[in-house]
Image (tube, rainbow, N blue to C red):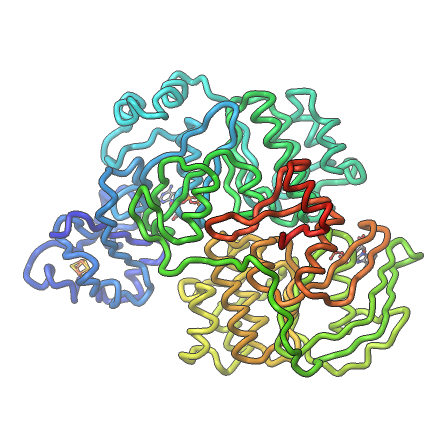
Length: 603
Ligand code: ADP
Ligand code: ADP
Ligand code: SF4
């Protein structure tokens, strides 16, 4: 028996009425008369009576894995836990259910980050820290008690915190991950929502610094994603609590807004001596935000491990390296690497398209965009950066032909495959049916290697498009965009809702696709790490959001980054060990030197 292995049965997938129990019929111990895979029966705490349970005592472990292969619904996972993991779970949801190891340590006066994929137990950990759930230490059959939890964490950095939770002394404020859901739960204007949460009298300052003023009297249901994100942030930070949990602050915000949000959160922790825990997938922003960092690793949906705290610099470096030193754990086969220098100017391929100066305005000129003429080359990945509301989507729609320019002619006959920023897929259709209607390559080993595997589509193929989460929908939309035959692939904010691991995978899928197909790709995104890994050249937008925008011609990376970051007044330095870009403290020596030299990114 493999005592370091766990069996996880996904009860949403296990469908005994549609299979013939292939799992138990083929299970070697079952075939010799042992009760390894059995039915849950009427007394099952969770699941239906005919769904299966797997005995972790009898199961032979991952090297057998026969049931995993045989189950037609991919409902079973058998996982050998890493031998380095020598502790018991903090919480297990039930028999053959998800287990969480470790817990993050909130600390007054500082910001603690968690870095890791979705589905790894971050919300579970927060529910425990908020006192909403007593962790059962893996004994899901017994009633859990805080005394037992305290025994487990006595003598650790968590002891004091757990005592306070047990005594009901910790109050919490929380910003949810999916801000798009807020209008479904709240009726009224942004001001109504904010006034109800203003426990510290801090509202006016948040409205001002997060630039919510122009929309504060609008109905919540009319706000854009980026406006909702800032309202949700202000509503959370304005509360007067001990512990603040923020599940992702960056989706839909541009870089300037992300940096402002990070500063406000740091001020709350430092000046008001509060404990803040953040989950964030934009690494440049996480780096700026957090003092300490827990890396979370494991198998999403099966088990998750939250490491002891690391310094934010080390934590991100180890995460990028794919190897956690203290834990002696490899979490990814290869490292993610950044180049210190701007990519050298390469000899250009054939131009794909040359476009003239363009202009477009809406209505009575409420917003106007002008675009400097330029050339896009065959086979390049062109990054597009700039604040929100500056005309990036407008340009995208000019290129797709959905909008006609007021000035300039776009007469090229290009096939453009376009992934919009806000993805609306509301056909009641399965993911596999949808994708096979787009490409006849669907299911070929080539398509699987290039698209389905890196975008982790296999486990969601049978789901309905309408039931997908934000991140799942994003991955399907990227796959759909890349699967079409086109001259130009245009992706608007592909990082939104993807966790950090998925961003890395999606980035390499897009990059590889461009290289292997000689395909030309334009990517609009606010995640600097993603841009750095993806783009060959940059198109930079500046101007005054919502009033006028200007698009530069495509530039070399060094010039483009300088243009873009000087506008934002932000400089980056390079981490000595990994060369990853890190935002400089404003007015630090490096910040001043780089600004003087005009080198905002590649110093
Ligand atoms: P994260 O916040 O990292 O995305 P969660 O803590 O929400 O992860 O969930 C981790 C895993 O625990 C998920 O696979 C989820 O399906 C599972 N899970 C969450 N709540 C329950 C529950 N009440 N019963 C069984 N499994 C659960
Ligand atoms: P970005 O993609 O950079 O966020 P957009 O191109 O979406 O910017 O929008 C630029 C500006 O144009 C915004 O102020 C937006 O409100 C406005 N706008 C966008 N579409 C329309 C439209 N169809 N009618 C009027 N104004 C619009
Ligand atoms: Fe049986 Fe375990 Fe093998 Fe599955 S992995 S068939 S439960 S022994």
